[in-house]
Amino acid sequence: MEEKHRDIQYVLSHFYKVHVEAVMRKDLWNIPIAYPETPIEEILSILSGRRHVWIMEKKGSMKLAGIITEKDLLDVLAPKRIQPYVIGGIDLRSLLLGNVKTAKDVMCRKLIVAHPGETIEEVLEKMRSFRLRRLPVVDKDGTFLGEITIKSLIIQFRKVLKWYRITRD
Image 1 (cartoon, rainbow, N blue to C red):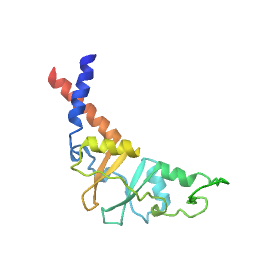
Image 2 (cartoon, rainbow, N blue to C red):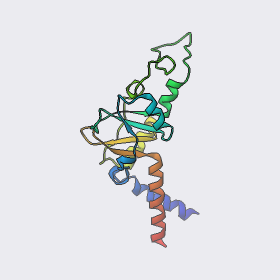
Image 3 (cartoon, rainbow, N blue to C red):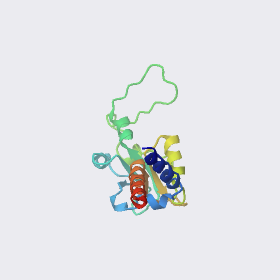
Image 4 (cartoon, rainbow, N blue to C red):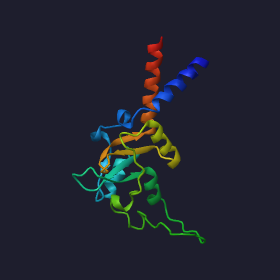
């Protein structure tokens, strides 16, 4: 048992040094993408089968503008309950109030991104620090290249660990 744990430590210490571009999802045809003017009904349809959708600046562009996650939709689906003692601004975006009609009305514009040359260790630190499950991978101009998710990192790590153990035997 102790040897298996050492295998994990050894492989993980090397896995941290791998660059994002080696493990990121690049299959853009299979990554959910929409645009700011996409109707909210279409966003609901996409999110009924996915956990998120990346929003590009406009059709024909791959410049990343935002993301919509299931949590963002929860915020606009749930009825608004205004507390009597609220400090700061109140978020009144709501499907019920009729002020959420397109993707731009609900998308998160403040993005934490990864770059192809970053290491997995750096990406995991961003994910942990900001409590994120996925990061868009963009080039220096903000062009969307793909995504990296905690799930894909777990899958890749398991594959590398399995390969390492097979080659050692």
